[in-house]
Image (cartoon, rainbow, N blue to C red):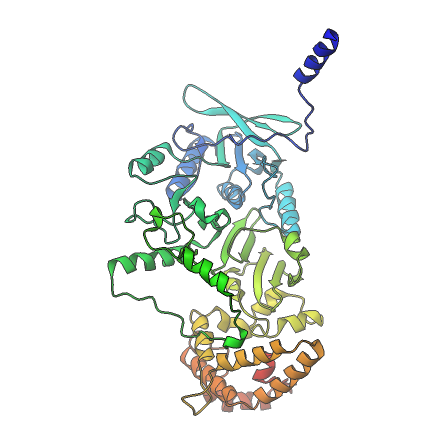
Length: 532
């Protein structure tokens, strides 16, 4: 028996085998801060910090064959490589270490570009430039000299080890908080939990101090880690924060509600039962948020709707544009596996252009990659537009009449979409009354009535029949004349920036040109056909 017990003890003392594809993960992940980094390790957060490595490279590395390491799995790492190439650093001297997938196996594995075609193109560009790339390696340590300069950096994967010589390291990995900043936050009486703790109104523990942006984090009572500010557009956050502060400074300030709202009929409202109303009322406590532990209805997080826009130049002169819905990035293949995920339209002429439309045929995702000399920034205005407003692109694409989105959206018809007041145009059209009337249903209210009629129909065949009847009746509606007159007047006011559209005073000249030119076949499409 004694031998059996000793044998069992020896077996338990032997470390168990850990498969390489399921490594043990520790929450104590290495974090680097700006406090104690060597002089040739650069963490770039702003323009001032970007100028320092450029001066260092100009004085120390340009004339020699020293190695430069770029570490990170973010879009900024690729932008850093492009900046080094433009700074005349030889591609053979650049080493790119990408720590993807993440060390934590439980973390969602979303690539930088989240697109197979973009990933393949960028990889081919890096290979053609002869830039050395190491993937799935993670930073562990570095060797520092007496002069506070690193000479080597160590990286470890699940099956290999690297000891790379370098004269400069650009670090875009996990960054810890600056110690002086951390001390200042705590001495100010503010809470810090992987970010400055705020509530639904951007208030910190000090009700007179507000904070917003990627340096913040919602209080844990909200269970809103997926709603962190780093997943949303900074300009919209600044606008919301400005409104909150103005309310405190100006008691008479009242936030204007959108005038284009539509109230649904009470028949379409879901009425809660008495028990549900009682539970909601019991949670509606009064008092300061910081002294209450109840999740009150007024504690709901504000809605942020502006899309996230990324426009940059990648290595090799590739122009890249990504416009996506606000919020945490979700893997593309997972989105497409969901029911009612929408449609994906892709073209490969003049570059790569992908549009994602939801089930209502509204653009909610744009990806562009091209080496053309034209700018891609204007294409961000396509986001949120229905396919009918985009010259019925869904019909053209599905009938194989559209194979180049770059050429399609750079045509003269689309220029009004890129105007600064295009949103105002669509907003004002929605509140137009029928021509010659000051009362009645606006355009938006009339379209909502149409939508409710279609909602009542359960059969697809009935919906199509009703849609045809409604479209025929809407063509004779006085709303059409009001919309036509308003659009013509709007184009006349902006004819300096939009000279490609025919003005009413130019019709005589246009007819004269048509008479002298070769005959062309003109296809006329009515406005109701574009709306439906």
